[in-house]
Image (cartoon, rainbow, N blue to C red):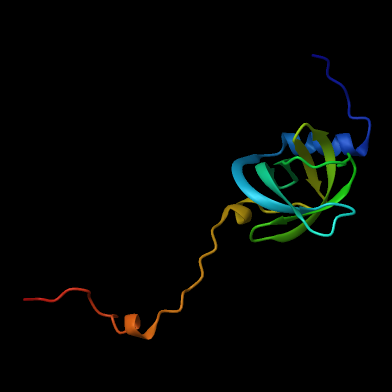
Length: 127
């Protein structure tokens, strides 16, 4: 296979993203595409600090398109589409993210109903 030097900024960004550490995962994200009012739900197949591989059938998506990706625990991240394949596309983020933050589960403290909060002690009786 022939090796070549990237000829455009998009190719250079894509090659940098491919060489970065990636987390393989299976999660959903929302992508706001140019000309669309509402985000499209995509499956994220792998994620790195510099970009992601997304899986979705999106018509009219072109290389170089500016997008915003909503990732769990991070919010919207601006980026550009660096390649488009059949049912998949790659996004290079405009600035690095923390992929571990995206994977982290958010646990919220629950309000405990009054009838249960009285059970602060042990849930058994001594005989």
